[in-house]
Image: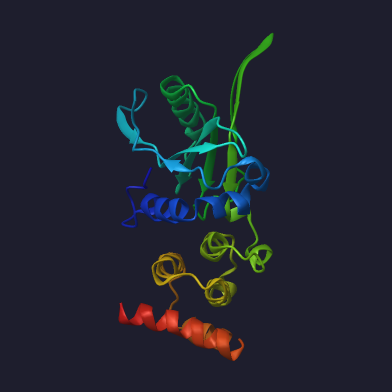
Amino acid sequence: MTDPKTTIDHDELFKKLLTTFFVEFIELFLPEVAEYLDADGVEFLGQEYFADTTTGERRKIDILAKVKFRGQDTGFLMHIENQSYDQDTLDRRMLFYFTRLYQKFLLPIYPIVVFSFDYPLKVQSNQHIVAFPDRKVLEFNFATIQLNQLNWRDFLKQHNPVAAALMSKMRIARKDRPKVKAECLRLLATLKLDPARTELISGFVDTYLKLNPQEEPIFQEEIDRMGLAEQEQVMEIVTTWMER
């Protein structure tokens, strides 16, 4: 759900990125799933809306994909939520989504949350438990990818478009912002994607790493340290921003 305090539609930006590069996202963050996922059998389902009776709000699921097990005719659902702000009741909401989707589709569901906010830095919950002194009635678990807990340096050599985009949302020291932006674009340039996909990732990076006038010269210095071919490709991307 989008934070009402901001004008950036974080959910839409992440939805476009992750649906365009769905398999690459799974390969980068959930390699165990990539081992049994049929990359050619991904179907994105229509928007699912649910009434949240606890708040009175009408909520929609961010991404719901029907996928197949590799080498099999059977399939399962993958549900991805982008969480752009801290919310104590998210674990409960993920359970509600799971039960309603399971009831509707009668398919196994693999739930995933991408925590994309900058703060707080505390590790987010990945489960919802209902327990009594004498027994545990329910333990619901979901996969979590908390970007502000990840070090952008660990992704520099990942030949993956999702890494090029999401490094811009990982934990970044203030002094490293120009360097990270340059590295995102350097990685993007090496991927040699078509213009539309290149623009999608470069626009994502520019949205989340807006540099101030003091950072711009440092950014240019980082580009100048690259090899000639990379410099030309990165500057072509930057020129496209300026023209747009």
